[in-house]
Length: 84
Image 1: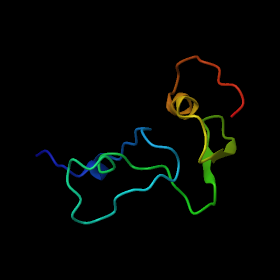
Image 2: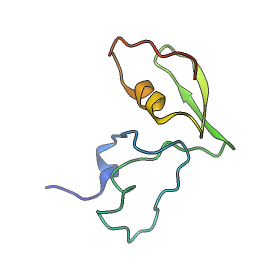
Image 3: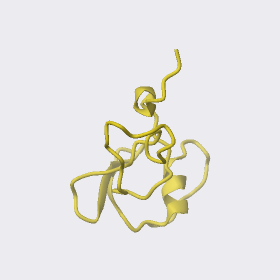
C-alpha cells in the first residue's frame, strides 16, 4: 500500500543545503517540499559532520556549493571531487 510519508523509505536525496529549514509539522501536506526528503542536519553550528565512504569524517559547511554536495552524495561514479 503506497504511503505519502517519505520517511518510511529511509532514502535521502540531496535537494537542500545542510541544516535547511524543514517542515516538522504533523499536518504537513504531501506537497511540502521537505516531506519526501530527509534534510541533512545536525546541532553543529555552521554545518554537519559527515562520514565518507573511505571512513573519513569531514565537516561540511552549510554554505557548500550544491553541485559539490550532490557529487559527494553519488557513489561509484568514478569522478574526482576537489577540496570542499
